[in-house]
Amino acid sequence: MLTARTVLRAGLWGGTPADAVTLDYDRRTRRRLTLTGAKGLEFLLDLSEASVLRAGDGLKLSDGRIVDVGKHWGPTR
Image 1 (tube, rainbow, N blue to C red):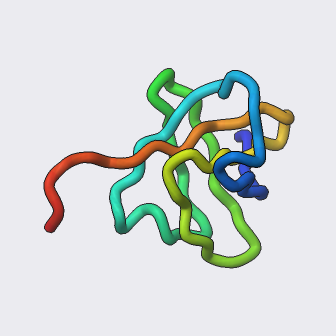
Image 2 (cartoon, rainbow, N blue to C red):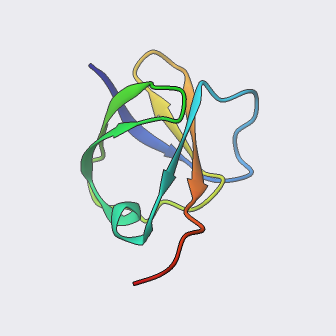
């Protein structure tokens, strides 16, 4: 399984992302989590420590591709 161990902050990466994930508030602060992108790309988020993921951040995959982090616009709990 692909892994993402690096967060690239919004504005510090470019290019076309391989996929995108939309995360609600609870899933934005995880250290380790299996995610599936909008196009079906499945990967393991495996950070050394918990980090707050923000809209526009990129997750660098083990094969060098980047997954864009989007914002969940649904109702809040």
